[in-house]
Length: 292
Length: 266
Ligand code: SF4
Image (cartoon, rainbow over all chains, first blue to last red):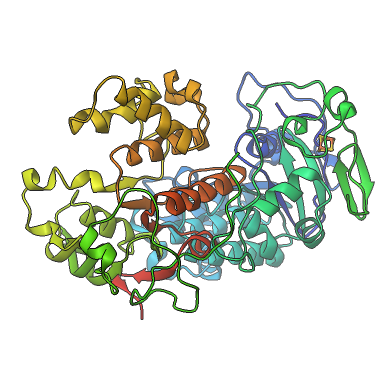
């Protein structure tokens, strides 16, 4: 369902892994965490600072912020206690030290001492996600994977939580892999962006290059279909014909070929290989720098 | 594909509150509106909400909201979740009866009507909801679900009924062959189109669009926005477009209202 995906997350940077539902973003993220369903098989390597990732790294070198904060928190303990517990089990702190460190970690995400004694269900969605961010960064992981961390929050809170997430990563030296379906949120929150379509990365590069001068036909079409502040009101927007393939569906050639305005015979018969182009890696037979 | 439609701002001539910098547009074609209003120079608003208060138990969800929607106009309603957008929609539709205030539709105060009196009016204002799969029954064919409002209001006959269903499928950009399918066999975008087709069955004047594109993937959103614009141009529909996607709202709407804590800002 996901094939030939390769990417690097540089130390201290934010990489956004984006794409529509079924493109394979979450599957890729879960493969990194070793959290795939039992029936899934994987091939390939995940290296963290040059050494392979082992299951024991979960929670230590790699931490996770899920979409649903409640799934990461225990319903029966106050959030402050949960963070103290994580500190004791991973770093072996004393009860007292763990408690004060937890207090500080929560203060850093804007949760007061009083709120740290609250149970998860007593906090708002935004506050819960802040607590999860504190929990995920408290043991200073090398890589933080956030899977749609703000999708269930309302738009005004989303930006604040993403800004905080990035800030905490910078403060703790963690790199951030931000899995998101919302292309527009990557603009202000990611250094690099990888756009997935049907299980492969079609385009990977610096965020402003990809969003302002896309090279892959898929990225180009997707961006063209989204209205911006500059789109004249009520004009008809360019649309992509057809729909994405269902996950697992295999194609002889490029998976985007049935919807691609630039598809040729080659596209329908042969998978494109990733190539380097203008600081980017593009998986397309015909992507070129000069305008088509 | 949709036929090319000239990009043209849509306003109702002389309507207060509409964007007067845009050129006036001829009266919408499609189903005629109430003749008295169509002929008048300063038409009555199609929908007039006055001092609307909506309560759920002791919680006040909407706290004194007033606005108008004119024929052929789109009013956008944005705001954070829990601000009262959807409660306003439910109260306009009389799905949840407001605590106080007026909802005048075509000059009739819906809040004063009984369920029985509302029945003939309901087809004229129709909701389209966010979840395209959730708003359709999973066990019934698309064509039967589009036909349902016609049957419920005693407008089903042969061969006009099936012909109307085929017409509605076509109007919403769906292949008539999809009519015999079940919702799970359709994409999210196609389901949302089927939902719109059903809402259009009894020729409504006002659609309450509650987050109609939020559950859709980016590549399918533009198609639904284009469809809504095309339908408005051809049928003269009015929209209340509720969304948290501010760019999409601005793209579609003549005016945008922002809600916070049950009130409209500004
Ligand atoms: S390989 Fe061909 S079909 Fe695929 S994106 Fe490039 S041009 Fe389009």
